[in-house]
Image (tube, rainbow, N blue to C red; front, side, top):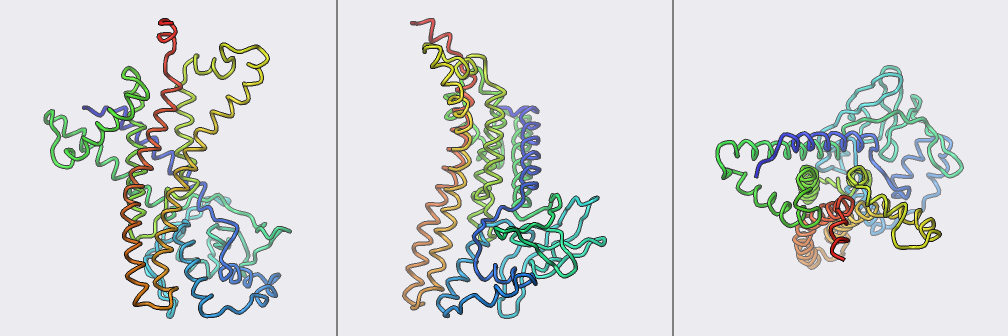
Length: 389
């Protein structure tokens, strides 16, 4: 099997577009935040100083649960720095900062260390920026954040192209993909049998070709979609495996990333569709005229529900797996009896982690399978079947 230059070009264009889209989207954070984080942010705003004193006093057990909840939410969210672990007693964070790239009356580039994990205001070229709930807002030297009636920040947000933790992870995985595919392609120049790591990679590529692409798209039309299907499969799979490490990465659990991946499937499907596909949508054969008109919006909505199902399936399954594992680990610290709780928690965590390794592969496979199925439905020819009747 030979990987053509067109396939490599498609791989490059896909991951470049994905990284740009995810960088613009930046970290998405739920509106419901941990009370300790909310209190700290509100206390910095002079207009909401009284709200900080209204927070009820927590018992040691409740405070411990709050910290666990905050840790799980921090693990699920994107961030502007890579933190391996933190020392709460000394208030130190061990990791490395990432570059912040903003467009605000010109290009503003600086290190995320200026935010000190959201505790200080960053001054760059006379502009002041504050990191608030994972997003960057323009502010003043005091770090004032103004709110609307729904308690949403009204400060101006510069256009953010920062290299966040998720973007860095995607860059690393993209570099791995390029190295893997180019190395395999070069090994075929030496002979029909690949060597080295290519011997492991080739069966996976043949599996996607023979079990996913050809059955769903067809033997005559599958080749031009192989580049996309292989990229999506290995991209999601490697990111899922990377999320299983203690690095705290949750890329495919970020809704912005899954939206980008599903959007690629949607665009490729619609632009590759033949006239029979569009004819079925806008003028369904075999039904009365009034029914045809009534079914047009339903069929158009159906073209959107398919990629929506893709993005929600991937996002929900990966996020749920991370939450379950982190919750089981937290039982060690929340439980009253450390000696008896630790073996149970570690045993359950190991069991769920093994299942998550299978889920990491299955979610990549299912996304690729459904993408090929949607593409196949758009490009398949029906006149051959009609000729037999």
